[in-house]
Length: 111
Image (cartoon, rainbow, N blue to C red):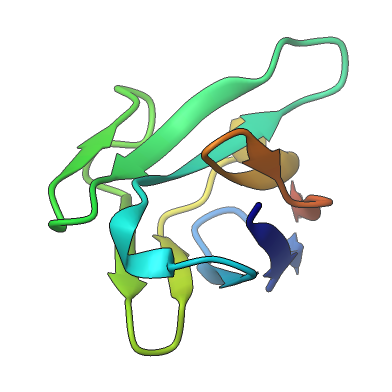
């Protein structure tokens, strides 16, 4: 089973940027597709971005053009670069693969 640890969340003003990281251990990272999800208070968890083991990516419509998912198979890490952040991006962000979830990292966009 894969263990996942997210980092990089925090408080940022609208229009700002953050980069989230998800470090994986316990299995062969390079063979897995990886995803970033988020859950806002009172809402269901939703897919934000997904990247295959070959590097192909998809995004939720709400983040297209603002967020970029990438992976480093040497460092066993997947990233989520978030630009032009909006208050509605406020949520706990989770990394996911092969049935495993990280503990989540809080992102708050507020002035």
